[in-house]
Length: 198
Image (cartoon, rainbow, N blue to C red; front, side, top):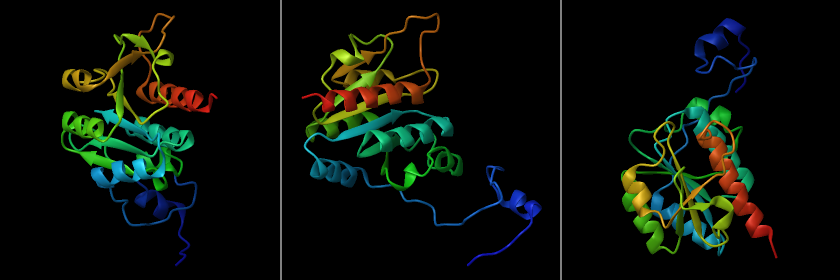
């Protein structure tokens, strides 16, 4: 059903206030069940790529990570239920439609989720400024979970301990870290690059 309304009406109902004169209503997207996400990823390919976010709170970062995950061919994104942003209108807008294609699972315990992913055959690679290896020196060709920490504090201590490898990005300037979405994009595309090699 199409309705014609004036800008004031649209402004009063828009959560983001940037509707560009068009709005649509749809049911809220459901989260994918964690076990189902893992099983589906493993069924689709021998070398699935998942992204696990440890405490991302900025909806712009989550939306951007979802957009990159879709572009890089990742099979899903895993987020915590608590102390992190969920699927919001802003996340959907920033994802530029990727939220329709990238399944998102919520978990109550990141450390337990990592253990289950390892049991399923995944290697778990965490991004950390104090990582032992540079990101391009670690094999990202097999079943891999890339773990990105939240803004400010990065990966939680227990999350770091559960990772198989901690990798760092080379930093040559005066700033010692990158935005979470940018770091995630670099890691995802390093996996894409390695997987394209003969």
